[in-house]
Image 1 (cartoon, helix red, strand yellow):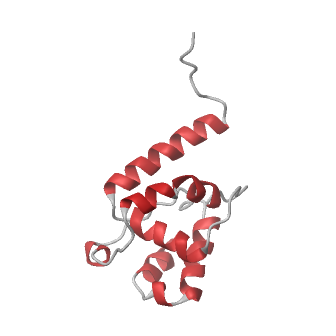
Image 2: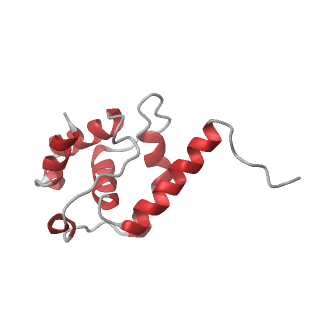
Length: 118
């Protein structure tokens, strides 16, 4: 499934169809372009988001690990992953915070963190 297909799936009733949420989660786990977990949706879709920022932020570490294409270190339910994709697609605050987590995590993985204790 391509990234365009992902956007089309997010425009469906994926919350009511486990197969669709599974397709969304599978794409996020395997796509090198989407593995950071943030896609962009239109404003018409975002009005129906029952997932709160607090719920989203609580799942940042698990989501990060579950969406690593080469070495996922955590598992996440498909529906939960689809909800994260949906929320991060339109919530600028959560997307920014998640982006910072991704950058810091990648620096740490490459052992490029600066040690402030000198």
